[in-house]
Length: 526
Image (cartoon, rainbow, N blue to C red; front, side, top):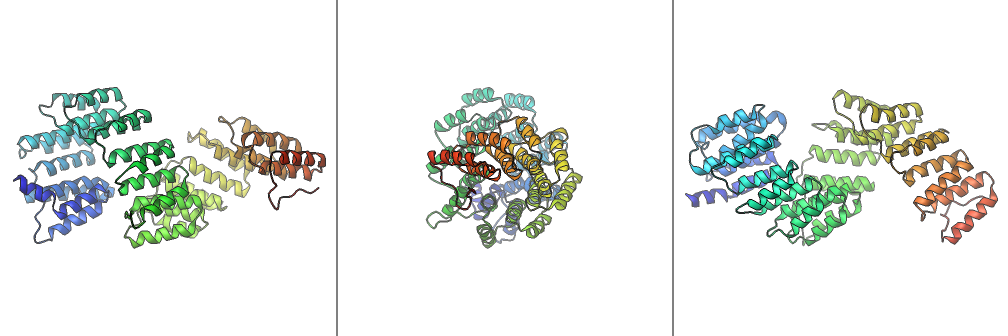
C-alpha cells in the first residue's frame, strides 16, 4: 500500500501538478490535472487532487467557489473524500472561501469517513491552521495544547502562528520544546523574526540552522531587501550553492525595489547564461521591466517583453502594470493606456503608474480623469498617486490647485508628504515667483530637506534673479553636497545676470581651490 502511494506521489503527472501549484500557477495546475484524467494509463491521484485544491484560492475570485464545489463532487464520485490529504485540503479550502469558515470546516471534518489516526491528525492540523489564519490565537493554542497527538506539522503551525502574531518569546519557547525539528520549523521562526523587523536575531538564527533549504535563504534575502540592505542580501545570495528560480527572483526584486536597477538587469542576464540557465517566470519579468523603467531603457524593456512571450509567459496583471510603468516613463502614453485598459483588475499601483506618467508628460486632464475614476472605484490613493497629480499641476503651472491637492494629502487622505512632494511644490512656487513662500515651505518640512529641495529653489532664484536668497539657498546646497559643482555654477549664473562680477571672480577662485571644473556649455558672462 505504501509502495503504491509512493508511486502515485512521484508519478510524472502528480509532480508536474504539484510543481505548478507550488509556483503559484493555479490555472496550469488545474489544466494539468484535467489532462491527466484523459491519460489512459493514469489513475486519479489524491496527492495531485490535494495540490489542485490548494491552488483554488489563487484563481480569480468569481471562479473559486464553483471550482471548490466541482472538486468536492469529483472527490465524492471517485471515493477519495476519505483520503486524509484531499480531505484536509478541502476543509482548508472551505475555511478560506466561506464566511462561516469554522462552521463549514467543522461540518466537513465531522463526516464519518476518515477514522484512522493519520486522518484525524491531518484533519486536526487543518483545523489548527484555520484558527491561526483567522487570527484566533487563544483558541488555536487551546486546541494545540489539547491535541492527543501532535506531529512536526502541528508544532510548526503553532510556532509560525505565534511568531507571525508578534509573540516571539512565546514562539521561541515553544520552538525549544519541540521533540523534533525540520527545515520548516527553523523557517517558521526565521519568518517571524523578519516579519517583526528583527533582522539581527533572524541572521543569528539563520547562521546556526543545522539544515537550510532554499526557503531559508530566500526568506533572509527578502528580509534584507525589505529593509533596504542590498549589500547584505547580495552577499547571502552569492553564498548560495543551488540557486533556483525563486532565489534569482528574490535577488532581482531586491535590486529593482531598492533603486539598483542596473544590478537587477545584470542579475537577469546572469541567470540566462548557458552555464546557469534558469527559465524566468512572470515575477522575474515584472522585476526586470521595473528596472528598465527606472533606467528609462525602453529598448531593453521591449526586448524583455518580447522574450517573455517567446518563453510562453502570459501577460498577467502584475506584468502588465510593470509594462504600463515602463511605457509611461518612456513617453509611450498610447501604449500605456492600451495596457492599462486591458487589466482585469486595476489597483492603486496601476492607477498611480498611469497618473505619474500623465503628470510627467503634462497630461493634466487625463491625470484628473484617472484620479476621479480611481476614487469612484473606492480605491484609496497612495503617496505615489500624489506625485503624479502634483507633477501634472506643476506642468500646467496651476499653483492654487496644487496647494489644495498638497493640503488634501494629510487633511483628507492621511498621507504624510515626502521629500519628493515638497520638491515639486517648491519648484512650482519658485517658478511662479513665490520665492518667499517656497522658502517658508522648506523651513516647515518635518524632515531634513534634501539637496534636491534646495536645488529646486536655487533654480527659481536664478529664474527670478534673486541674489540674496540665492546665496542663502546655495550655502545649504554646498553644505549638503559639497562635491557637486552644479550648485556653484548656478550661483555663478545668478551673480552674472545681476552683473556682480566681483562675486563671480570670488566664486571662480573658490571653485579652483576645490578642484572644480565648470561644465562645458555653462560658462558665465564676464
